[in-house]
Length: 354
Image (cartoon, rainbow, N blue to C red; front, top):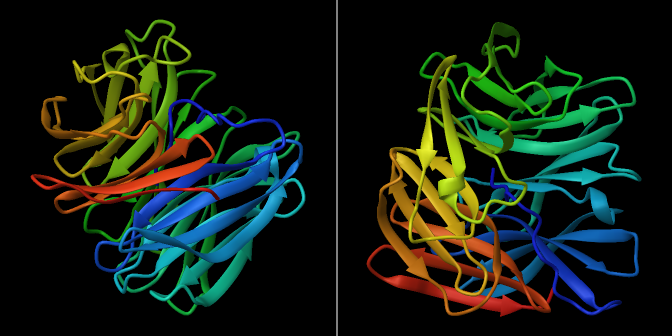
């Protein structure tokens, strides 16, 4: 699950077709799945498109849904067979979430629609290890807001559905496995209060543990910007500026079922950071605009390797696997995507109109 710290810049003339990258994940071989919002500036309705990238060529695989332009949200998750799961806001006013399973060839194997209160936004997907998937989404109405989690088996049948975390405030979320006990964790940083809240779900989807850190000290006027997760724990990014110009303006909060560690995170001289994702043993990051870059780091922020791109684009989504990073973002008149490998550089890259 990948999220930008600031909105992608859409550098297009009025009325022209625009593509806004939503997410990216690995496909078979060195390929990738890519979701893009396709909209014209004069229209209030947009279409979310799913592309399959093979040998550096993006082919439209499917149309995921049509929603209000300001309500387009999509999360992607790779499957072991090279296919992917998609979670997309659907309905007039994004009143539901559509969960689909795609085979390696782009064919739809099944679809399941879920709703919560009224306005629903997909926040995370997790493989269950048996061919199924867990989906977390944010749902809110005029009076209530909270996180829902549903577990679906490999055939697309609902195993359980849980209203995991009620809250009255906006929040940023993360999602990860919780050790070897078959449990899963949904986490939220609550912007209004500064609290870090986690809820642990057992194998039946029942909440069995809540942890609230209270207001985290020494953050001053900082506010949460995004969150990510891995099996090792959960990370949240906080900033004291609305649009951070570099990662040395961010504080990283790491939580492992309630324990908190924090520290200032710097990637000097890499600046213009827009994305940071927790992976085993460290982070992957991407940023810049005129000379965008991607990198891997250790847990303390030390850069282990990085790559700079010649194409100007605004990174909007990242994902990774062993020895490689996928990155995609918005550029003039379309989108840019690339696969970068350590010690090799760009295996493929493309720039395309939506």
